[in-house]
Length: 237
Ligand code: BTN
Image 1 (cartoon, helix red, strand yellow):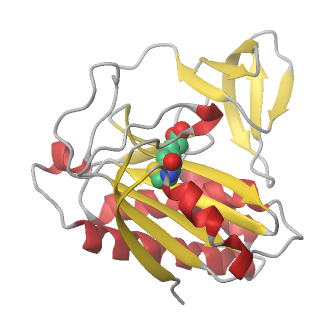
Image 2 (image 1 turned 60 degrees about the vertical axis):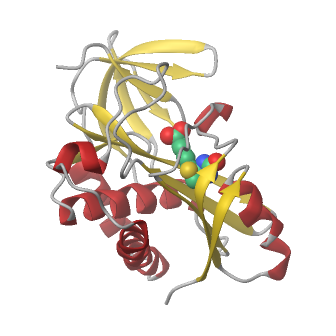
């Protein structure tokens, strides 16, 4: 099971292009060499020069589930498996969906809803060897492996892993998905800062629940379940 895939040279954002296909009701993958207005979570700019894999999957999942969280999990797990296969040492997930290697961000996932569709955007730094001066704490597959990689091969591997997880989710094995996600979660029990809207709280991530919410123990002992937020490690080693 694989969606039709359309490759573009340059787009504003693959999310926007995928959205334009939503009325057709058919799954499709949009991939671009360059995005001029790639976006990340919380409306942030996502640097999308050539060399990275910039893709969006237009999907029509069952409405009974909290697909937004599940997609984030599926996307980040698919990236972790991809990186394992490419011998990028020890990738981990920073809740909810940043994929990091040695504390540096290598991939991000942005899930958006549009009518009955869910658009899962995945950006992976693959062949870049440098980044804009404002971007720190990032890395790429090439920087980690000292090898260049063919983007169509990277895409094929990633999409096949994504669909493995998507099938798992559809077979109602959500618990299996969450368990695997838990295994790759980093920063557990470490003191971090989480920004939720305009509030910042300090404490330790303990777990994720079966809905993908972060179970977070504040420094004052209060346990919260967070649906969204930006986790910041206080100090990367
Ligand atoms: C994040 O970490 O904030 C999420 C980044 C998601 C980036 C991808 S690249 C492909 C797709 N198109 C976009 O404009 N964003 C996502």
